[in-house]
Image 1 (tube, rainbow, N blue to C red):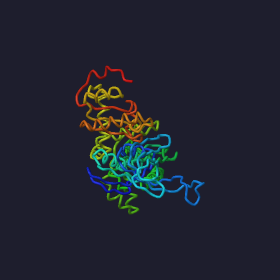
Image 2 (cartoon, rainbow, N blue to C red; image 1 turned 30 degrees about the vertical axis):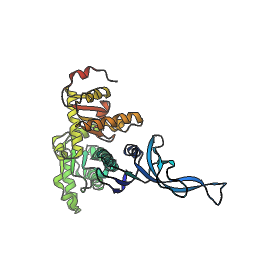
Image 3 (cartoon, one colour; image 1 turned 90 degrees about the horizontal axis):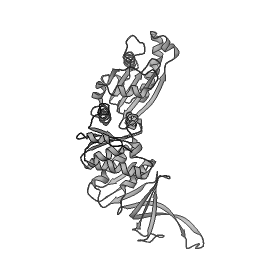
Image 4 (cartoon, helix red, strand yellow; image 1 turned 60 degrees about the vertical axis):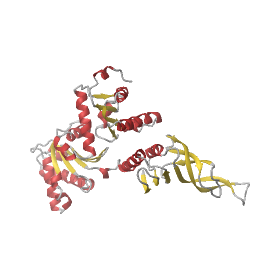
Length: 388
């Protein structure tokens, strides 16, 4: 969602001009707009003109509706806002009831008598997440070097994006000691690195793989090649950031399952220290804490809708972890249920983290039904309940 204009302060009257850019933005509008708000938008109506009263013509109007109710339509990703028109014009009288349809790429003004904390937070979350699916928000780059291929991943808040895969030629991996063949491969990786890694955004780079110096295609060898090429080509933006390019040894999966390898890399203490102050670091660290507790059968963790809801009723949730498959579910009632749960946990002093479908930890969270919680205190009897 894009915020076009803003004229309000917390706990005061004010107006914003906003535009939905994707289907999920319309759902956020459904939560943002409440009864009593004023929505102003362009629309069209069929009217009978004085010049030809027998034929109805469609004209463009600007309506100012004081909202009496609103309906979200998931199939069309539209929001129908019903209300009383506040300002008369040539074709619509003040006080008459009308409906506006809010949809993607249709700007409108929203006026509230009071922009309370919940409304401000909803608007901030919506506009902050506007570019979450974009690799331009990544603050960590991971270059995975294997004997047959390399991959470059960009990671940011809620997003893990594999932006490049580079295959080594048969010559490169059949002659491990060949400097010329490995250089051909490394030049391809270097070109992809320069294309995708922007040090104005990326805070750190991790080069990971089987760090065997006897192998021609190792992370350490590629780092030396990277810095050497940068110096040769006078790419100062790489040379000046060489301290932010680190190596992490990691055994690569021969089956090519890079997700597993990537999680292994991110759980490395050196990497965690690099990203500890970022949202990405918080999300990965929190999930690792949860997963370790699950593996150790701790009574301070629960998962599954029924167990989590029971823990919440006992005010036991310290941190809630939920996938956006549930939080942004296509079924309206399911979505309302989990949006309400997240809000209630926060209001009770707990934390809530929503994991995007593109997050590196989401596949494991899905194994736990997509919703789990770290508890403030042990609840041993909770595990005896049958979840739905």
